[in-house]
Length: 554
Image (cartoon, rainbow, N blue to C red; front, top):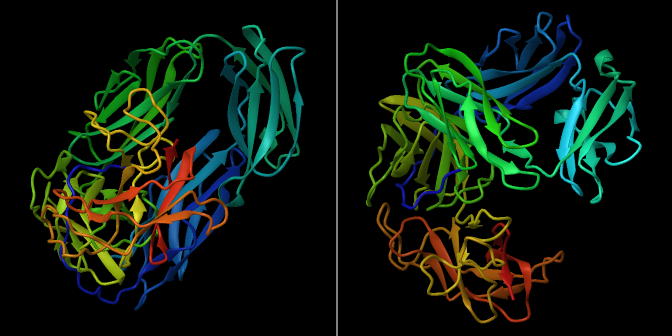
């Protein structure tokens, strides 16, 4: 998710022409459990039309074991898994109608061939700490735990249904009392009654209690989808230390010619280059050597090289650029983030100045067929604004790239859709205090590396927001803002369970941030009588409420 330092306005949008609108009963199937040597049970997903006219559907599948066909309003999915070895497999069925809004859409299909329960488990934890691991089974079996005579202890507990109740999820936890000596402690758990025969077994579990660093990383695997001969793309894997001492990343091995891996502190930067590669799937496993007790990190990487085609905006892929909530309406003047693939063939590009043009990096965004100024473009994301003159109701957005017309996706537009921006630390607000520091002072508990302190009653706090709608005087599309206010707005502090228990305050200023485009600010005095490290705050615009954020008040 990217928020950039330029903010802008876009052009008026017209009414969308009547069209069919694709809807699917689910976007994910599985995991479906299959015994080795057998085909899985066929699955069915229902397609429907939420618009006008009629659908004319076509389907395609990304994996050789995955079959797809259309019968009336049903997408039939065949699982040809008999030749697959034990393991977890994921494929995608794409459902399309080039004349429909919100098409194409993808159905992610996951199968587990043979047991998904590991044959053994190793958990690493510091003295006085804990560690966890998860597994899935197709039903709710009987599980018994055998603990070691001393030291670490194990437990296994259900964490509820897996995706769409296809499975049951269980969590294995190891705990060590603070006085536990360093060493390895082995117990086990036994599964009985699973409908998948391979699950019914005893699994040894070893707790490695250590005072050394313990490496953890996210995401666990990385996938790139890049068009043939398009620009390189970079993703990051973040490492954290779940143990004691300091974690160090030492070296990287296993990168093929199409992948560059570089250590940047506790980040691993992975850059995939599709140059010279034919369409298809390329895989590698990167080994990152560390000083951690659990040794090298093994990270699967996949590069899917796509045949060059038109830009594709994902269904429900146009979101506000503050909280990125799928399905929420957008307001005139809203900074929107559009997600998809093949949106640009160039390296990520950010607009350098205002006013902004309607084409950047070879890409243009259209709202109801009206071009909108854009200020950031990459292969997978475009940031733009909803026009200030856009009418409330249904609208259609599309991307054109280098003269190729993209698909259409639907959005809802409302007069206001207030969102308070988040700092990215816990649930705290992107808000600043009036301290004369070189960089902003945030109203959060004192945090190393940041100018931060709790706010005080009577101080003015400036909250930053999106989606507060049209202003007085009217904002000019694409131009840097002058002081232009919105209203009416109330800032509500300290709401608890009861919706009327908060303290509403009328701000001194609520409107666009001068010199920028599309960014709003709300300047408000902190009321007396509230204190705490996480006091909730939200906006109320005539009964339209924003998301909740927190600030600290002493």
